[in-house]
Amino acid sequence: MGNSFGHFFRITTFGESHGSEIGVVIDGCPPRLEISVDEIQNELERRKPGQSKITTPRQEKDQCEILSGVFGGKTLGTPISIVVKNKDTRPQDYNEIARKYRPSHADATYDAKYGIRNWQGGGRASARETIGRVAAGAVAKKILRQFSNVAIIGYVKCIKNIEASIDPNTVIAEQVESNIVRCPDVESAKKMINLIEQIRDEGDSIGGIVECVAKNIPKGLGVPVFDKLEADIAKGVMSLPGSKGFEIGSGFAGTLMSGYEHNDEFYVDGNGEIRTVTNYSGGIQGGISNSENIIIRVAFKPTATIRKQQRTVTDEREETILVGKGRHDPCVLPRAVPMVEAMMALVLCDHLLRYYGQCKVL
Image (cartoon, rainbow, N blue to C red; front, side):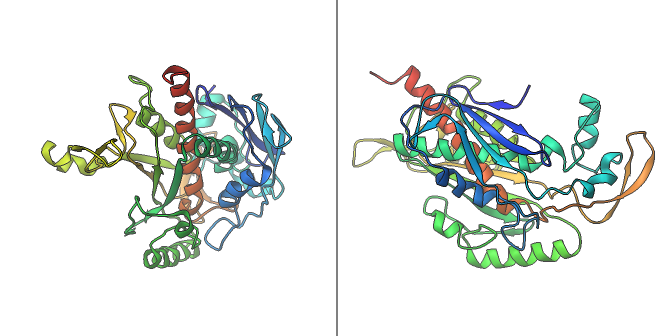
């Protein structure tokens, strides 16, 4: 029913924003993989609320617990269940939206589809659902590092009209984590933080773009025709709350180039490997990885819940006015970075296992 993702490496997330707990079940993880709570917790720390002055003030430690699938610090090959308890819930903040629909949120569409919804914090439509994805992504990252030394680095590329200058081929994680907005361009990061604070004080919100690069990708990941690697990555990141656009490689800018300009010419490197001179393809050709860096960009809209008056209607079709309450990010981009990384990792891990299952010579 749309709560599971992946084939060989498959996850199912569960829980609501203001329920007792939230989490994920991972199926298909190889056995004997060394994994610890700390490794998963490190990723959740990057996603959790209340981590800086430009994120939601909701205070959640998001401390994870592994309930199954790991013994003696190693995976068993059986389903891994990870949960996080919700602590700082304030359902009373959402009493007004029990009947009123928040503009550009999921309230009206959930009611239209199911005839019932959890209006406390948005339920499953809340970005809090991504706790399970990020936890599973930590396991996927560990598999990718162990099998192919894959590194996945996301960062904030743009917030509103402030665009950073970043080389995805040389950026490192330490640069990303050097400031609270997760933009490795220091000067642009300062401008972004100031803008977010200004918008927050006005009771409004803004959006932007997260760019993500995956390095040391082996050749051969991706399953044409319908499971092309970029198609699965697109589905993964576009399932994130607030995502509204996807690009890979040259993206829409490629439409301004000629075929001669856009084609990635081949050469043989010093190790006898076939490489490309340029990487407008974004590391994927014909739906299959070619070992060049996979570079994607994901656009996120401004956070839907704001503290300004807006026109709306009730579930009984009465026109009314709504002023959003609760604790929300004025800009989701800094916390969206680990979410994008997680979805990239989940897709690449799934396709790595599919590749080994179908094509690896024993």
